[in-house]
Image (cartoon, rainbow over all chains, first blue to last red; front, side):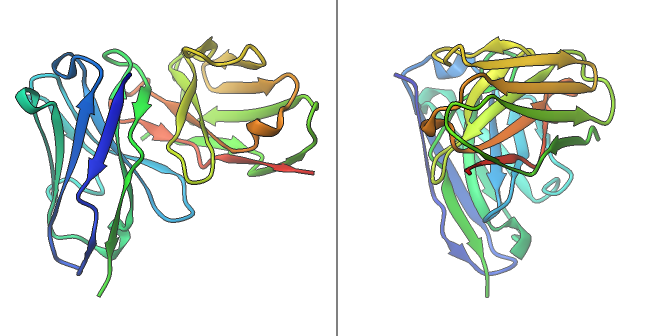
Length: 119
Length: 108
């Protein structure tokens, strides 16, 4: 059974940093491209970042470019999102999600982890 | 950026009804359009990809159609467990995914 379990969400002050993790199981993690998607409270879905299978290819939404860094450790079946210079508008549930195939939509999602940016 | 717009924002429906949700892209996305279902407190679930292909385990009452800029998700006979928010997503400009704002199905 495919499982994605996020962790690391917390309350952080504006300007602070946080690192999210996503533990994957039930599939060959190193063969799948991965993404982070977020959802502000009561709002819709916003794509945040993509990483290729080896970690050498990454993309970011304009809203987080230069502040967030996506990475992965295939030996540990884990995905990460390093978030720096956090802003109030980064407050959201962050989901890790697997791509069904390269260039395809997201077929498995974790349960999400809440990041709250507030003073 | 490809803007994706869904209508209506909210739809009040009764079990057994046929339901049609719409999704429009600001430019052609070919058939690179997916639909997701999100129930309260849960993660989104992939329903449809390639505009019309049901994902694994999705009931046949969910039917996707369209291409280019106009897409539709039809639920042939609404079940109570289908009450949720539905999002469409373009992946033509992969991986710069964009989602619609969602359509919420409520009980009439």
